[in-house]
Length: 209
Image (cartoon, rainbow, N blue to C red; front, side):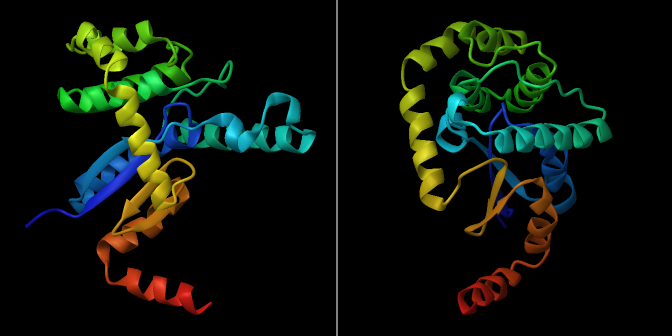
């Protein structure tokens, strides 16, 4: 019998995606689900606006969000330093797809998250991501050929498919067509995994409200 599948959309520059990793990987061990990890590369100006447009209210919210995420990180013994600038994580997302195909996903995933949030990796520098691939036994040359070849089209198709499902942020988990956004929804996701019939009740209640 096929294992239940949970699709997870993530982005290496998201602090909340970083701190959700531990519990998400535990789903495999505890509930026997298959995790399908996909990139959802956040386009910061689309939902945060340009720096010039941001208000004092916005910056208070951002400071709180990083403080809040750091509490989760500290509880797990993770280092989380605030990002030094706005990043385009395409190369890191392409690296995720490449690593999956070459049996390197988990070490790649853990390494990129850990080193980025320790200020030891620039995720928008192709040479840095190539270096991670090479350090794990992969081919930097093959990865760079992938980046300059089909990676962009594949990446953009995944983003388009995610948005067609309703995805707008990370981490977002998809189970039986239902979306769960944020690490604080993992408990609700677990309830669905344990009792998949509850989705019909939940969706029915939603339609009646």
